[in-house]
Amino acid sequence: MWDAGRQRWRLFYLCLAVMGFVCRVSAQSPTLTTINEIIVGVGVVNSFAPGDVVAVDVDYQQQTGYLGSGISAAYVNSANDVNQDTNYVRRVTFNLGRVAEVTATALLLAQPLLGGTPASGAGVQKVVAFVDREGGGFFQEWSALFVAEEQSGGRVCFHYPRLSPASTVRPSSSSAPPPVEREQTIEIMKPVAALGLHAAFIALPHMDENDGQIAVCYRSYFPAAMSALY
Image (tube, rainbow, N blue to C red; front, side, top):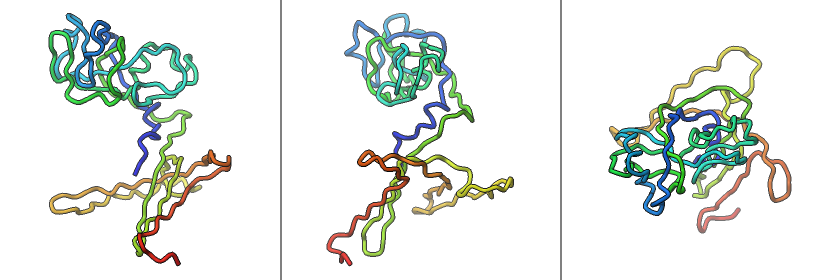
């Protein structure tokens, strides 16, 4: 089970190419705006068409820390790091929707906005493309919980608070590329099957808030009901 809240690799490495034109969630009727209907007003709505993908979020106003409505989309240390770009929050936001229908004053979305109902005055921009880059000095981090069952019916849990994707299981001085492992097909019930994906991670140190000690993994054992303790 992956903790989606720690999938921070997307926050800095995947952003949106948005159009310069910005319209606003209507300040006259903010309570009517929902996660499925974005009211922008008469006339402005004509700038959108069914099928458009839109990003809905607040302007960047030199905030620092985690940004993004509903779901943290990026962490900013300084406004200069993002060139004080007014559209920056909408470039990284998870608050995306596809326009299913356009009314006289509103955009009706095919699916609810992930980040929740936008604030009054939030900006709405068309998404032209999804832009990615490889490299940079930001550590890609995940967290993970692995659960294993044992013969007596109990469960052993391994929690890794910080994991970084790795190209190989163990660091190697060899310059040869690692062997390619093909995904395995796991049959569920014909013709339904699942793909078992291969991944390698490096466990990074984590400071335990309880005593300030450094740890890389937490292990827990949940015994089965009525099982012998020894």
